[in-house]
Length: 132
Image 1 (tube, rainbow, N blue to C red):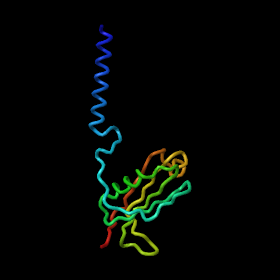
Image 2 (tube, rainbow, N blue to C red):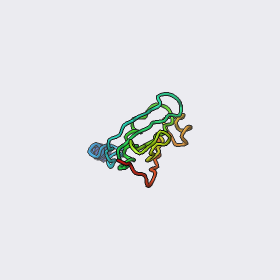
Image 3 (tube, helix red, strand yellow):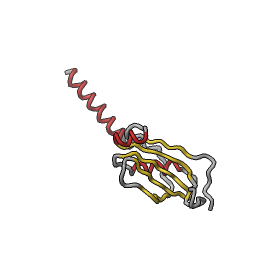
Image 4 (spheres, one colour):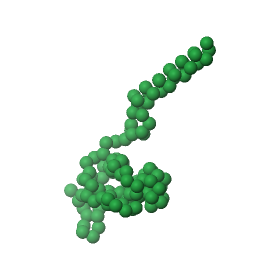
């Protein structure tokens, strides 16, 4: 009889956990993620082990959220290098770089970026502005 009670209690606990995870959005870690400001992908390599993605934004606000949004779309096996630039303030010879990020997808991506498979890394360039 005690065995059935323990089994029923264990099943109830698992069901409660499943309901809690569903209510909290699962375990994807995105509950606190900020929505990304508007951005535009102006260049994206489609082939190769090392791929560059260039993104333009209108302001320096929440560039990490922009990187995270772009990184979620990158899923082919490769090492991705994401450049976030102001849409204004650059010249033909030099862009107005706000930040750089990278993402590893698969073993090739890990080897290319030095990150673990699925990992990302982002660094904002401090003191940069987007002129109007």
